[in-house]
Each structure stands twice: as C-alpha cells, then as structure tokens.
Image 1 (spheres, rainbow, N blue to C red):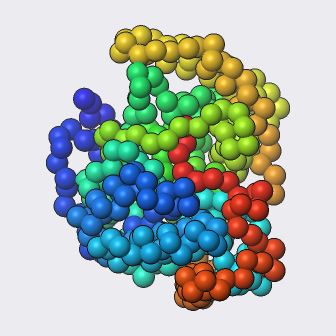
Image 2 (cartoon, rainbow, N blue to C red):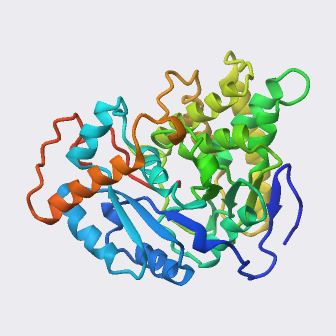
Length: 394
C-alpha cells in the first residue's frame, strides 16, 4: 500500500470505499463486439451498472448483421437506459463515407461514434466489457475527480494474474519508449513525456472526462486509442486538470504476441500514436537510433521486473521478455499519415445523424430485412480484414 503522488493527481484505493460521484450526470460508453454476447464478463459489467444507475449507457457494437439484432435484444433486457449503436450497418457506412469519414475501422472508431452520442451528458466514462473483476466502485472512482473540478481521469491497476506479470505492451514497449525519448531530449525533459510517464498504466482502456473535453478529442481509429487520448488530454487538460485513480484488482483477457491481432500488431499502432502525441507537443523526435535507445531502456526495466517478480514469488522469464522487446523494436519509426477522427466540436457529421442512421440499420436487422451489402465500402466484421477485434490488451 502506498500513497505517492505523481505529476498528475493520483488517487489511491487505500480502502474499499466507494466515493460519491456524479453518476446520474454521466454516460457510460462500453464498446463491445459480438463475442461479448451473453458472456459472464459482459453480463457482470451490465448487471453491476444497474446498481450504479448512470444517466445512460451507450454500447458501440461491432457485429455482423445476423448477430446485431439478438445482441441488442439482450442489452435491452437490463434495467438500464441502453443505446445500442450498431457500428456496422449500411446506412451508417454511407453517411460516414459521404462526410469523408470512412477509412480503417477499429475500436477507436467505434468509441468515437459513441462519444458523439454521449455529449448530451455532463460527464463521460469509457471502459471495456471483458473485465472479470468488475466492481460498482469503478465508475464512481473514475468520476470522482470530475466532481471535484478535474477535466480528465484515467484508471490504473496492477496486471498481476496467474502468478505472473502481465501488462506486457505497457511494461515492455510503451514505458521504455517514453524513457528513450526523454533520454534523447536535450536539456529538460519535455512536458509531454513527463505527462505520459506520470500515468501508471497508460494503456488502460478506462477513463472519464467532461463532455466539454470529450468534444475536443481527436480519436485514433484503432489500437492507439488509449495513448492517443492521453496525448489529447495533455493538450486540453494538462497536469493541473488531470488525475488517475486506482481501480484495484482488475483482470481481463490476454493476447498472444504474434498473429494478426497480437501484441506485435498492437505495438505498431501504439508506437505511432505515442510518437504523434510527442510530435504534436512540438518535440523534435530523433528517429535515428531510436530503436537502439528503446532496447537499452527496456533492458534496464527487465532487470527491475525480474527483481520485483522474485521479491513477490512470481514466475518471470527474462529471455521471453527480451524476445518481445526485439519484436516491438521493429515497430518503431515515423508515425506516417494522420488518420485520426476529428474532434466532435468541428466534425462534419452530427451525433443525431449518427444515431438515426445506426437506429435505422438496427431496426432493419431486427425486422429481418437488412441489406447485407454495404455499398459505401464498409462491411461486417467477418468480411472486413481491416477491422481489429476489440478489448483486452494482453
């Protein structure tokens, strides 16, 4: 148990207290895919939210046409004001294409659509649905800083499960990358790097923000969502208006390193989002030698992780960790073209238009008459090779 403050206000779960928070003025966004249908984890999250009683729950749903209707019916069975925002229908795809918003699809794009719908409430909470240890205190803890005048709140937790250290993409990629960038900066470490370093689990999917801040966020389309959001929060909230909160015990799905949806693929998106956030803050990134500086920083951290694991009687394989570092180093390079979705305050589409298109699409599949062909260039998750599966870092 500790109570050290970071450069951003850090609220620790020193007791089991569930703090008072403005849940009745908050929309909770819970992105889901069809694989969450009827699962124990998703059911636990939704049943627990019934006891929290937020103003609204918005579920941006990635699902094929034949699964979207039954999924929405299942969501309607909970005692919550749930808006199912089906993200894969033809009318919504046509609308987005007409407004120049088509492109790669992923978790970030789905969350962005839901954030627009959440702006009617004063506060917005975002978290995943695959959590095996969901508690009603989570929403309260995320919202508590906002009730005290902060604009942005990020969740953190220790990824220790099955006698091992997880959180591998954060521990072995993000953290040493930020350290390497700081080591290469001449003079004082840039504020953006100090900000990113202050968050104990920067890749956590759980955050809350005022609707005013949410309306100004540019959103990454895919796996860079979490760190991209931190970069935007730095620009709009900064140290003074940001906080992080301890969510305690938190378990969710793990990913393999290799494969089309593994951590290696995720590292490319996370790396690009991190480097873009740093460049956005007017930091001149030294790309020459960056991969080597990253590997040196990671090697130092691996020694620390090995000691920490031994101290706690946890299993630890330093060679496997070094192998991951070598894989992640290949992801480092200039971030490429900026494909972020625009801030809702100046987006070329209105959230009500999104709602109407998604509602019409969902009504169509519920009636059994959906057109499976999406002539706007979209598609269902089953036929769109670009669409990544959803939540669960590692």
